[in-house]
Image 1 (cartoon, rainbow, N blue to C red):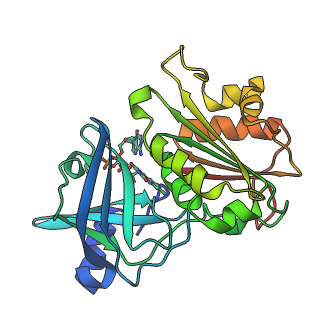
Image 2: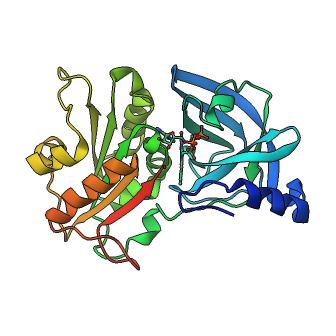
Amino acid sequence: MIDETGNAVASAVSKNLEVDGLDAKYSRETVLSVRRWSDSLFSFVMTRPAHFRFTAGQFARIGLEVTGSAPIVRAYSVVSSPFAETLEFFSIVVPDGAFTSRLKDLKVGDHLLLERIPYGYLTLARYQEPVPQDLWLLATGTGLAPFLSILQDFAVWQNYQHIVLAYSVRTIEELAYVHEINALAATFAEDGGATFQFIPIVTRDSSFALHERLPVLIQSGLLEQSAGIQLDVARSHVMLCGNPQMVDDTRSALKARGLIMNRRGVGNIAVENYW
Ligand SMILES: Cc1cc2nc3c(=O)[nH]c(=O)nc-3n(C[C@H](O)[C@H](O)[C@H](O)COP(=O)(O)OP(=O)(O)OC[C@H]3O[C@@H](n4cnc5c(N)ncnc54)[C@H](O)[C@@H]3O)c2cc1C
């Protein structure tokens, strides 16, 4: 069972295990590489079973086996393209966090559980009206993950005219994947395809060009100025992912500009809270 935040409810997992056994729900995957960005951020790549098919923007549920009790399971957005042979994830380390205080010691060759099906609706398929024109991807921290997957789909670059990726972190050390983002732009932003604006934001460094929180940058107009396009109810698809406070405040700032939540295919704003 998944609670309202997408995380596992331990008692429900153990019940499920009694009924189905571990293998009915999870496959056991092998860690192929680990990359550490800072003390509190790392990425890892693991094997991808043939049955695990997902849409860019969805999340997986990853488990750590614990001797004598039910596995600890958490939701993780997939960083990889749906066409990749392996699965990459981008993780925070929460001091005393039940999952990440163990996961932080992950090494090549370790095993992780992967729930057999993906979840989530932070996908571009949800947008029907307005038709694709401008895509705004607004992330805090590890909320970047689903957008990296979305940006690896060639069709996205063909379908949209403008793509903006705003990525907000606290310190410059937390700006992970910058090289990869620039490489994506170089690969996909071709003649005739979408224009691309990458907007890094560092909130605890007032010397950084953009250092205010995303909702403030929307209210002041600075985000649009940096993007070179306007937020517009008739043109914008806006996805928000990461810190729930950012998601709430940014959603309010966007609504104040006339944008509406996307429901049943219609509307501008789609969100995913990480806790
Ligand atoms: C749909 C969905 C997708 C997610 N995708 C990712 C992902 O791609 N990468 C990732 O690192 N986490 C992701 N998370 C969060 C993840 O599921 C766990 O919460 C996280 O791994 C911490 O687990 P924990 O048991 O150590 O701490 P928890 O007990 O789960 O969390 C403790 C506290 O840590 C803080 N926290 C939790 N997650 C984060 C985070 N990502 N960044 C900053 N602070 C956090 C919050 O204050 C939270 O209350 C996602 C969550 C959801 C619901």
